[in-house]
Image (cartoon, rainbow, N blue to C red; front, side):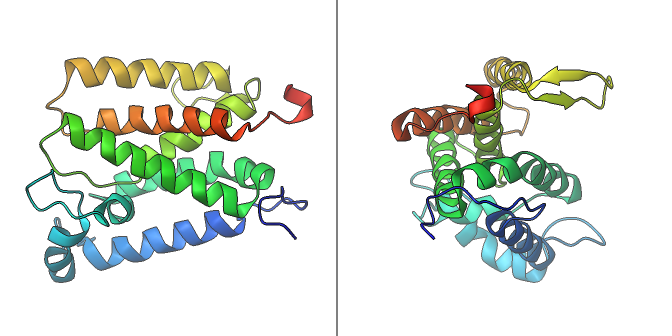
Length: 208
């Protein structure tokens, strides 16, 4: 089967999602001290090589990929991977595994590049790629309702994505020193939008 074709059978853990979850979990257990705080000895040794470092201050090209597999703590990785699983399933089923993976990594790399140009700090986490996934879900399934937790009310995906995009822009402009890579999140949204338009990806017929 052509790997760019949509998957025909629904799965709660399609291949790309499954292996992204596994590899993020492996990197987390290897690098973060889950019984204390900070890096494990292996994490301390690998961090200078794998964390996305500023240009001219330890930057290496492969860090644009490896930074996506590193997370600061349990909450950081939990919310990123939970969002990847919740929103990514439908996209991988719709686009096929190969295109989904290309989209995921390109949005993550684009998010990292944008963060490098606006920040002098180091960056870790899959959030940029996850925001790209969120944008893709909102564009492919704009009227699908998402149940918010706080407050517990349903909201259409297109409004959910719009709210988070506006929030990240506001936070990026007003809270640049918060320690959160807001412009990486915005970069994931921007690159995701460009890719969807460039590739001509269409909504399923029920959302057309």
